[in-house]
Image 1 (spheres, rainbow, N blue to C red):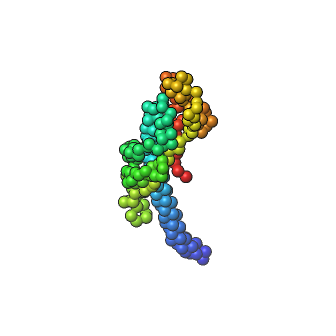
Image 2 (tube, one colour):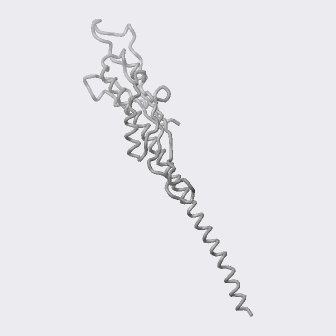
Image 3 (cartoon, one colour):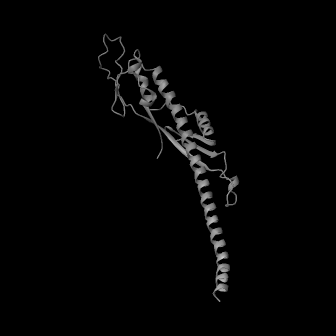
Length: 205
């Protein structure tokens, strides 16, 4: 009498087993789909960050180069070291860095006083999954990178010692953000700060 009941119990348990396994498989594929989407979004954000930083760094280097050209004329320093002469035409670097991260720039524009805003879209889609439409879905992301001047200075006063009156005023000392002092001498490259000493480039919060 007990054997038939055991067969009946086994027969009843099998559909339940199949249902549980199917449910677990569905959950596994669902988690995989979520992971694929998250990885794709992370890739898009990485590409956007790299692109925005690259454009800002290129502009920073141009500003530093402009300063080196007039380092002997401190009257021209303020406009450059304050970023007033910045020309935001370095989006080509954003395109290059986005491409290196397998993404395409959808927009690159100046942001604020000294920055770039870059929008990107991944070249690869999220991929096939149990979620309909993901095979054609591309992740998008935006990033803003800013250039921050680091080296304020004071110009010598009109009554500063200028030798016999024909010599130029002494070059002012630069005190940069990390408390490093620079005494620029056009004839001594070791006294001239690098671009990263003059300007910090970082992502906006």
